[in-house]
Image (tube, rainbow, N blue to C red; front, side):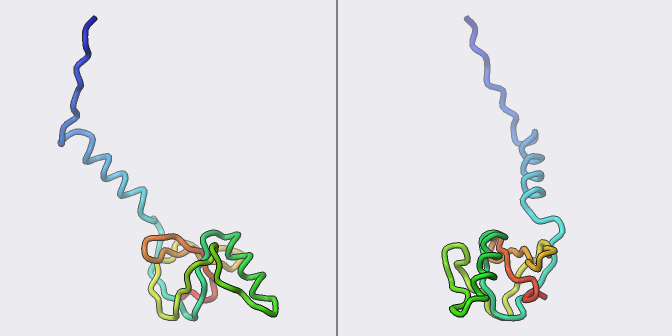
Length: 106
């Protein structure tokens, strides 16, 4: 029984191309720089942002929780990926994707 030899691609083969594709597909294609106009909480999903909005309409108001763990103060720089039709904006802050109130993003 013969052993198969391991074929090395080498540094000039496919790896630089694979690295270029990895960089291309991990960066947002249509983001724009933006800023936070007024203090807002950042949520981990659109559903969490909707729940926070509904909670903020109660007398107790919106509270920080595990789905909306950070507060973005006024003047925070973010990258805006898209604005939802429902009034939410998808932003990137410190390398993470967050859903925030669309009216508080410029």
